[in-house]
Length: 546
Image 1 (spheres, one colour):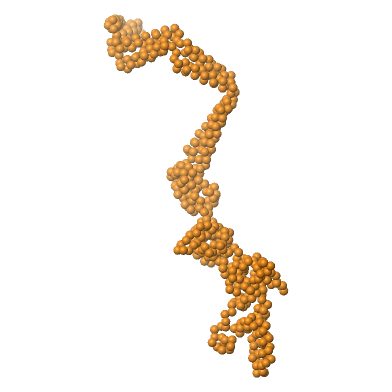
Image 2: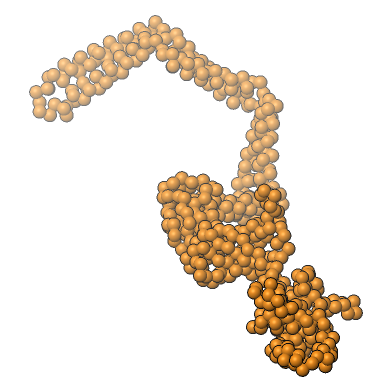
């Protein structure tokens, strides 16, 4: 289509029906010399007759609006969606490290094991304590046996007899025995302190001399038969042996009597004498209130044990025993949990990124031992201007291009929009997270530079229609959609005016629809282009070159 065709269309729009009428009148008035010009004008108008008809009918093909206003593009870096830190929950020494950086692990796989010997012993001890508490409760609930009752009765009788004795005081026999014991103890102490008397020494010396003479006589008799081979079996040998023993005994007694007593012997003898004297004094003084109270307490305790056996355990005892069982069960549970905690397992499937411990290391609860992440779960965070935030929402799809893969476009989806903004040099941006949902992410690594292109979720329902097509009908804004030979009203929501075009939103419109209305755009090879005047160098409508 050349500029002459465009000029005819513009004339038709401006002049309308008058152009046709004027042209007929003009043809009737001119002479035969103008007939060639008329034929030339008719020849020029003929190629665009179809286009002129389309304009006069007022139908225009609607256009998608997303390409004009709804694209949001921003750059960011690929990052992992989440990293899982495997943290030690008990103190201990590392026994085994079962993974290395780069290993792929499944959920629940054992990664690190701590030394569990002490933890196993704690479990065994807790189990023993629980068994003991359960046996105690069983004993409380069980009925007393005949032997247990008989022993309790005997214990009570003994306690009662002791109380009676304490209350009645000491008997004459007990007093006599206490006096004798005290006198003997004091006499021994005095003997040690004073040593032997002169008479005792003389007697002991005489005994030593007599024993010595007897030993000499026995020696003389032995010498008479010493030549015999069986001398050891003779009477003289036996008499000599006995005499020698008697002499040694007498000599030892004399030496002990004349030797002074040691300080230790004196102290021991004095302590024994004082104890015997105190016992005698207590018996002579009679029972004290303290003695009587102690004896009464023994009777009460024995009576309580017997009553308990007769009636069984009371509710308080049973409740206390049950509490002991509950405490033992809790201790056992905690010990078992500590044993389980000594095994550090993968919280989810993924790849090992870091290993922070070695075998034999001493670690404490809270230490990060292993870091795991799913490398197939990737995302990028981009900064979106405040004016573009209303155009996007969580769940909206996006196209992601990565610098390392320039020929590919990856599928993405908005997974989060930060509620707070960041301001830099007066520009207000909101961080938006785009999750990569493409199944083919081989080779994509965290840190790579990427660009995300977002499209409004309403793009599929937004269209450009001629501004002249928008009308009001029965309180609604509508456009007349051409259908066969009819025109049907379609309700729309106007979102903005783009010159001769208006952006509307409607789910009843779709690609290929035409509506009643016209613009100065001309359809050319399935594309709409605006009229902008004749091309450069072409003659003006008056026939003159510029």
